[in-house]
Image (cartoon, rainbow, N blue to C red; front, side, top):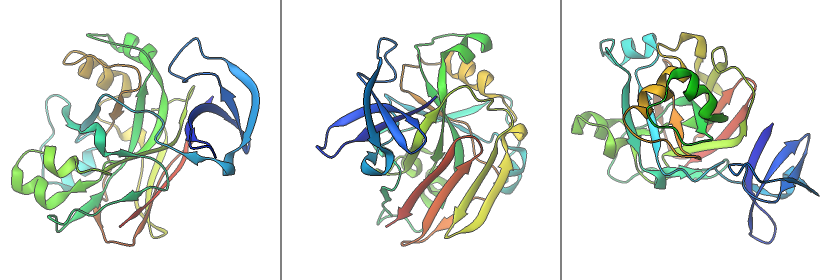
Length: 252
């Protein structure tokens, strides 16, 4: 299934399932197991796609690819390194990323996003796998100069618009072997595969659930591969993940 959250021509927020170039409307959110498919169809190009969910939190994993650890001059962590991005930084496809006036370096970071479908607290890896609804593309936009200056990552990671997610949530795919790329103005800057994760998706979700309760709609970002770098105002950035699709945004 390919779930979307969108705004229709009446400016109403709705949910549906993408089939080809059309959306079949749901009578509720896809996070509600009681929601049913309706007989109403809308053209995909006639709506505005939004970030798939409105998460209570975005939990991010740092340093989950060995080559990225090397390029950032970090050592391999004993446990997964987690941090939070403010939920107010979430935006959807085609929305603008805003360059903060107080930063001198804003970087892209292509990431696989995990969308939580059911509440999980203190879960095993098997329970974590069952709690996952599906996957999406994400860009963990980072004010790199402020991240380095602060020594912790909250400010550099949490500016409004710093977490594009989309274009939809894809279920029933194996997250362990997906090609992932980032294109900046059409040029490939990051290119890797999730097979190079240090920690698997179920392990990450289980680990995080030992710390905090994950709720339906919450997002887990699974780390970025090597090749991170700066963007400039006017740049177009695309996160492309196999079996999911492409997330397009522009830095303004």
